[in-house]
Amino acid sequence: MISSVFGKTKPVNYILVLCFLTLLYACALFLRFNREISLETLPMDVLGISALLLSVLLVNFIVQRNQLTGSHSYTSYFFALLVLLFPESLLDRHALVANLFLLLAMRRLISLKSLRNVKAKIFDGALWILVGSLLVDWVLLFMLLPWIYVYFYEPRNLRNWLNPLAAVAVVGLIGAAVAFLAGIPDFIGTHYRLRWEGTVEYWAQWRNAAKLGSYILVVLIAGFTAFLKLGKAGHGRIVVMRLLAISLLVGIGVVLLRSGMRGSPIVLTFFPAAVFLSKYIESVRKEKIREGLLIGALLICLAVFSGEWLLA
Image (cartoon, rainbow, N blue to C red):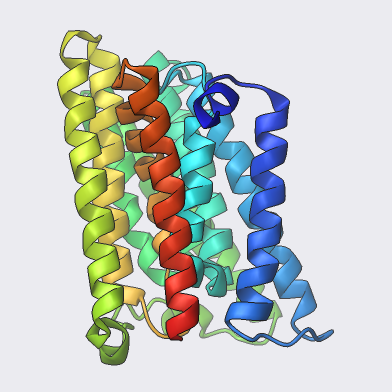
């Protein structure tokens, strides 16, 4: 049933995912994490769910426009399941918005494979990453991506290597000016502390470490399988998958550095993880096995969500 619904790119698939995430957002915040509804927090809550829903639409756009997977909606399905598996990511609204900016950056960087408007795409990609880092300082680690993309696609042009630095100058100057006008002239210096912000209590809970470890293991296996299946594919697709793998590893690094009891930026890893999981499901030829895997993933995520809620 699930494979027949999400095995095609229909508008109803996106509506189902968006409705599910909206319900999950309200359920997780106000029931599981016992958040109170107030006029003070309502704008940030609306901003968080808006960023999450826009991220799903942007993920589908990137995947379909660049043909990262076949013509199906498994990527949005797995993106929603990952949110269900890690509801604590909904507490970090700064990370939800930063992830939207990061996806805008990935949209530009992945499209570099066409080798058109290379300089503009590198600049835009670096610019969006820097904007995201204004919300989550460790997102600055993703600035490795523009230079890595330059290395893979057009390393001989010196201007391409300098474009990310131009983006740094633009965001730095505009950010400093806005901070000065807002009465916080030392914002840039105090914001980019780049120090470990995780809490020992969070990682000391065995279920947090076990869940993250299992997630990383499953995604890495799916990614490895995807690479094996791409053996006969074109060089361009293999390069894109490598770059997504690098993005996943950087995201995991940010998660380890910033996760705590009040939220986790693990949403930054959901896009490459959902692509790898989709590629794995895509490689399963037998429909019954594919259906079993999709249903099994849903049941596991529901069981983990419910179990953690009862044990909380």
